[in-house]
Amino acid sequence: MAAPTPFPRPADGSFVERGDGCLVGRFKAMASPCEVLVDTDDPHEAALALRTAETEAQRIEAKFSRYRPDNIVHKINHAGGEPVAVDAETAQLLDFAASCYEMSGGLFDITSGALRRAWTFDGGTRVPEPRALRNLLEHIGWDKVRWDGAAIAMPEGMEIDLGGFGKEYAVDRAAALVRAEVPRAILVNFGGDLVASGPKRDGRLWSVGIEDPDHPGTSALYRIEIETGGIATSGDARRFVLWGGKRLGHILNPRTGWPVEGGPRSVTVLASTCLEAGTLATLAQLAGRGARAFLEAQGARYWTV
Image (cartoon, rainbow, N blue to C red; front, top):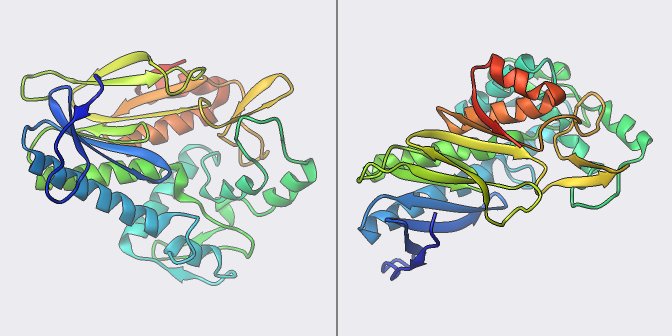
């Protein structure tokens, strides 16, 4: 996509630019650059789309971020083994996490976020001590969680982390709300996880660039043309460690505590929603050398590096 050129800001101060025949609004959320592309010439429509998407992204981040001390995730993680009742939205996400756990044979596990205490995927060479990993593994396992669809309880020392699909969920939610407010073709992109609602007015598709994992942030390695649906990519372009002559990505095996090896450098999936695309991409990475076989078995549309 061509670089946007400055566009006069609406009176409300929203950050909107013109680019590639549409208007683009940008903000930051979930530690990612976010943008909303609207197939319109009306800056007020674009500003409304931007505000709607940003508000929803901030709501979801505030509610489900593991880094906040005032939300439901913190309450669950610090309940000391006592059950915590949850609302319908949280229940929906926990049900989804349980389904992913079953589908992956236990490899997609939202209790494995505790491993972040030992790993720092900053491109360095530090890896955890075996004893530290063994201690953490004692506190991992969705099968240890009591979840009845309305309340959740975990042994003390365990925690959940919805970061494995939270951003993709936020993309789908934001896109649905924007479409309800602005009846135009849109593309919502949160840090490379995105969803498109339909073709542009002139019939052109949305062009999505997939970055080279060896040169993140530079020109696209290849491009995907989409009309509608969600796209998500999972790989080691930005979060990795170097150890033993290997580049280890941030996708961790909850049984060993170590990064999964043998999989593609990058997996990009196109699906009906961003949440589906992101989940399939992550499950493929968890499959390691079996990534492509897994995606083929799911009938997924995918690209790998």
